[in-house]
Each structure stands twice: as structure tokens, then as C-alpha cells.
Image: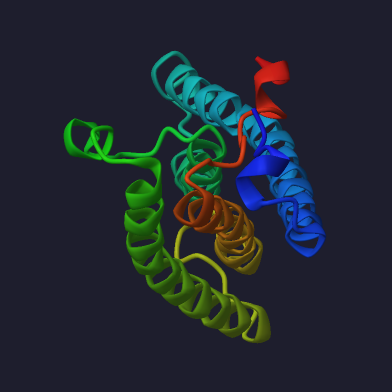
Length: 196
């Protein structure tokens, strides 16, 4: 259910703004949905590398030098894109006991306040993640293990993932603003419900 024209008084400028917000939310949510559908295969890659490690270690007495580190490097991007996924699906942690009893406008105001903390935290992770990437890229840093892979590709996943997280945060914040103003939230699940 989208916001009806009556809920904003038929104002055409506001109607255009709402249409723009709805399109933005749909596009960003769709992009993050498809990214997560791709990134979910990281779990398979992590699982296969661990299976290979266990078999080579215990069956052939020939442990790998890369499997544990490779799996550890895949956890970071997976967690960041999982956060995007939970935001798209609106399944992040919330105190439903209190929140669900509030009116939609009060919910929108509370969402606007709490998502401000989100901007601060993800902004810091993006800033420091980007600096860590630049440092490792300019110095051609490698891991201090026997495998010694380049670190910058893995460190790049943090700022890229945070950028997508911030884009999804804009969509969630737009939903909170609309909910606070009109009392009716944007339908953030319309695009994703078809993909289930």
C-alpha cells in the first residue's frame, strides 16, 4: 500500500517528491537485494574452503596455508551485506513491545532519532575502512601469514559495503520521514516480496 494522494492533500510538488522517494527506495532496495543474493554464496565458499581444509588436514595430513584466513576474510563482507539485507527486509532488531503500540507518526519520529545514531556509526566505519584500504593499497600490504595475500581487496569490501549500507540507510530514513509527516510508511517491501 503506497501513500494515497489524500494523505498529502493533493499537493503536486509533494506528490513528485513522494514519487521520487518511492522510486529511490525501490531502486536501492533492489540493488541491495541482488547484491545479497550474490554475496550469500560467500557462505558456500566459506563452507567449501573449511571442508577442503578439514579433509586435507585429517585425511591426507596436508593442511592448507590459506583456508582459515580465506574464510576469515569472507566474513567481513558477508556481515556488512547481511546488514543491508536486514534493512531491506525490515528485520533489524527493535523493541516491538513498546514500538508497535505507538502511532505511526511517533514511530517515524523515533526512527528518525535512532537512525541518526546509525549514520554516525556507519560513517565512522566507512571513514576508517577507507583509510585502512588506502594505506594497504599504497603500501601493497600483505597478510603476515604463510599464504601472504594482498590485503587491499579485502579491506576495500568494508568501505564499499558501508556505502551500500548508507544508501539503504537513506531509504530507511526517507521512510521514517514520510511516516513522521503523513503517518503512512512507504512500502519498502513491495520489490522484495516478489523475490521470495
